[in-house]
Length: 251
Image 1 (spheres, helix red, strand yellow):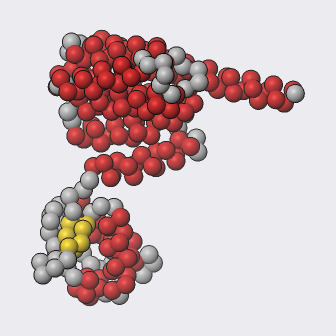
Image 2 (cartoon, helix red, strand yellow):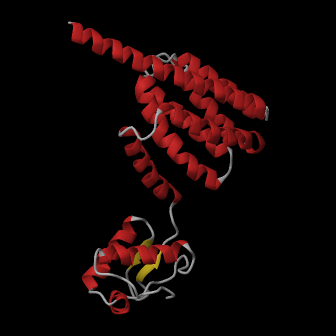
Image 3 (tube, helix red, strand yellow):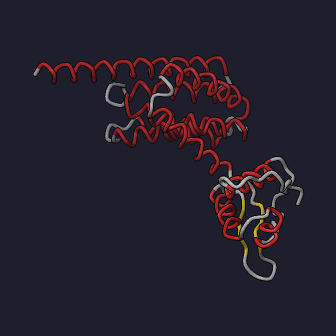
């Protein structure tokens, strides 16, 4: 196994060993489905104890980078990275950063506009009938007056998830996972009381129609107007909150 075993210091040994193996997997020195050396062999190679090796392997398993297999042909094998699993980890970190105020709404809207506009252009070229059907199903649901606010927000996310899928680009989908799965739900939590649901559905209708017509200019224009409305709704929600707090203080 072409991994450099020297220069492993004793502080946080398990993490360092896991990091070395992880880098070897990600840069291709360790191939998908390749068997790792045994715990005993790893311990001897790194000059550490077997319990420390086990801790390192647990870290890698938690990152979905390795898998264990029992039996005569068993052992520990390199696992094909799971894009959704990796995206979930990124999304969790992004959610935390938004929660502590690391990003403001203008940054979030700006990032979403630039990245989702690329998806719109690609979707106009590559969308399938199934992609369009998925978007239109969400629009029909969003038009329902009986739909709860929570379910409307979930449908909003699914619509944009379908738009990203229609772009047909794996790396871009990975990048957009954070935007759709973290930024959108957080924004929705703030704006849902002030935005007009029918207006959002109309923007979605324009997006779907433009993508069906393969009109990327119209699609990006609809997206830009939708996000401008989200920003406007966000500002309105914060204003209402400030007014309520001021009224409580006066009362």
